[in-house]
Image (cartoon, rainbow, N blue to C red; front, side):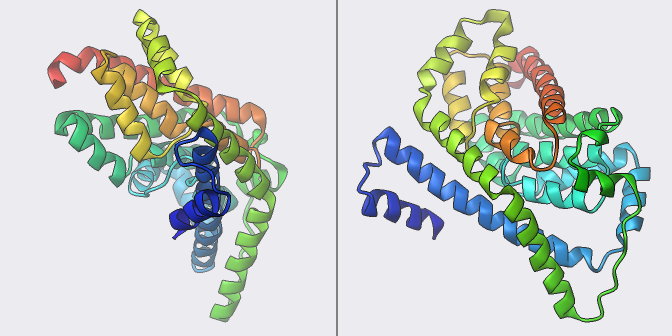
Length: 319
């Protein structure tokens, strides 16, 4: 329905051509903005209602004591959720609001866009089962290791004040006698967060739409193809500011690979687009300060570069 509405508005009402950069960019903006805002509200509402049934201090204590196991399960949960980097933010924010340790929440945020059923199916069709399995394992590795590293850096001071207070102290438990009270809490929680973040969503998706539709793939291919041994870090850095859906980024990686770009370099570019994006950074500014955003992007980028080189080394074995 959202896709039909976006097509109707952009191509019907505004009469822009779907072949033009402006038409495609505006369609992308309308569709993704509505999708993310609706998903943001619904997911925070659902999680808010569920939180009224769960003892928050006990959950926080349990997950905080489990170390790397908590990061692993957060990554597994991320892998089975069908969200992009921006769509994962509602759950990430809800985890922080619930007082879940910062490193654990990052494990979810990193893995969720890297691995999902759509991407796995596409990779099976384009790359085969061996590369797909190694990709899934690598995605979990990036999520767990990056989350553990970020968790041990004691970065809670870089959260915004209202969220930092929930990370550093006990959470005040509330009793809900009626189910209507639980629904009310969910509605209020969703409305509060959406009210604070909606402008960041629009700005972030707008920038993503411009990059997605105005940066030719040939330019990326030319830059990466001439980078030699530095192709993996350059491809990763080029992919970080971009934004796209799984349906779009897997074919891009396939085209790069078919044009002679090493497998690991092509997959590193795809991972960077999936896990990190400029729109995501803009939306995260609601919850975390700029320094922590840069650290998060830096740690994840290094992990992706490592995996890219690993795939390049194993390319002859996998193909």
